[in-house]
Length: 548
Image (tube, rainbow, N blue to C red):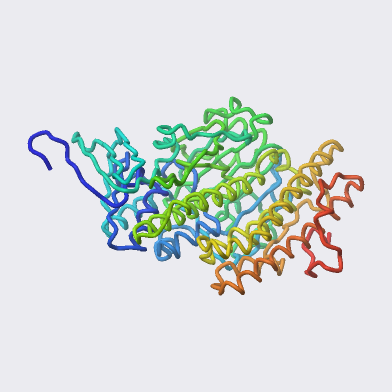
């Protein structure tokens, strides 16, 4: 440090801009992989932050849960301080008070692969403590004032203020994890839109909102074991929207409306009063529950056109973007922590290659192609699909397909720790391309099926009303979930992926037949041409919709 009021100067191996979920988890991952690495994190907020922090991203799914529990080694904290999730649960309950008479999609018992509901404030406080314990230099309450990115081998330089003092930090690597602030994205003009026009409003209330109180029907309450629907990520679904309920371990409940901007304008819900009025129309039973005095409002926020892309996230000049500083899809299916896990793992590998003296710049290009491919393929699950969300016939089929696609390809790749094995990925490229083609045709078919139902004045199959469509009892579906953490040699893993894609073939054929049973002349969008002959398909037990 220089004399007087001169700037304090420090040098590091990696500077992480942002100490939220993405930045702190990256710092921990870097230190667990290489304890000798010098990592500095610069975070605007002072720690500890308050619990029930006002952030989207409380619900984890298999990839993100694996990353936090196993890659970062945080399983003990998750089990002790967060809420074990009871899966996703969907109620097709537009305008209904009698939730126990609405079609319900979910599991009656917890599936084998764990996931958790994350109180973001509690979790990020814990991550900050863990990072410091590992030797990360965590500058909280600090504001980044300048970023100098170099294209030669000179270190990048970041200027920031903390406690009234001006500081500079230099490092060969800078990773932007600053969330929607997008410090490097803005500096380099990397922002890129997409065509998924959706909005969200969300808020927190005191106390746990328990669906068990929505019905006195003992059979309805008892068809889940344990009868803890409140631990699920509960989705109340209607045409063009879904409403989430997520419990937080701090004793608060997270609530949010996510909607297609064309079908439900943001201006109809962009204050708490308007949002409650909207709920009284579209989800009256939920509104009645939230009107109780024990559920006092904690905070409220809205976000317009929340989904976006980015022109570049990894650079051969030793900088990268991770988390929401890069891309953001949609909170449906909770992919946020998944994409943090994927980008952080790729960034860690690039830095490790560089520190080992190996060529890393070509891998930055390869990993970026992979990452954008995952982003673009996942975006197809959401884009132009919100009109389906209230269809109790089509939407349960879509959810089964979307899960199967996720568990067939991307989830095994990450959970099986194969993400950076480029030669293996090259051999599996035909399988991933086939899965992509099947999914593109399937999403188009599902969209047309929903449009045909809507035109006919039907929002689903009346025979399904009041049933629990139980994913737990689909044997092959249960096994796909269990198998995600099988640690396989590469030859066995390749065969697993081929088997998974064969299952996708079978499921696609089942869904196509179901759509044709409803609308014999439906446009299949080329799906039938992609499918093998019936004799060549896998033989599996039917799902509930194929048997109905």
